[in-house]
Length: 294
Image 1 (cartoon, rainbow, N blue to C red):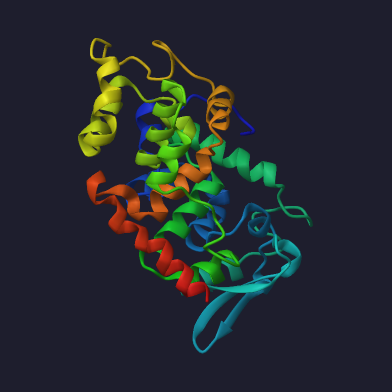
Image 2: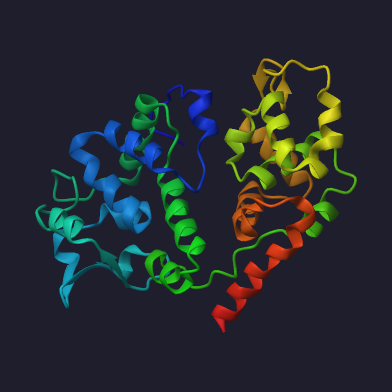
């Protein structure tokens, strides 16, 4: 959980996505505490985990053939395997200009909780909800969108990209057979929007209508249940109060679904930017990934 609670505007929350636009990132960066901004810039360009980030020192910057790399030591990684990450010249020089652990005045690194707190404070100040995990997902999705799978594995320390579970449309439909209306609507909103569950819980009837324009075949029957509802009413929970995150997770669990896997599915299978009737054409992505693993 975030170290500091703060209210973030609903409009800015709805704009959050693993694919973050330059304006969003620039605005968030400008509100990030100046003395810690190097943390944010490194995270944005490398996709490091928080534990890897706080252990960054100038000694790990390597120059090779006029190019700069950062060495992530195995003792700070999840899989206990070291790796090197390419750095821009400007970022490498900024890291080399630091002493000791990154942005820490003590001989020990910043705590992971402190980094999470910095993001929480900046989210409140900027009105843009971002977390270190969202930045890492952004870097991963950016690399995957370029079909740069080898670099994605190397840079983010992911052994295999195909091990990540995801649902196809047919699999999701099968899981939702017999599910409650609220469960079905919640799962489909996450799956087809690619938004974080907390963002989907803020969806209003108007948001559903917008989503239905993109995926009419999926949402037309569901939308009819809200024909007489005010546009500003929340979809989940009471009309003036959204469902809690814990309750939403319980609802998805009742259908053996994971909100994280639903979001992964959205981006694994082409982002669902084409009409649903053409969706199966985009399942080639997973086949392509599997071939890269061989």
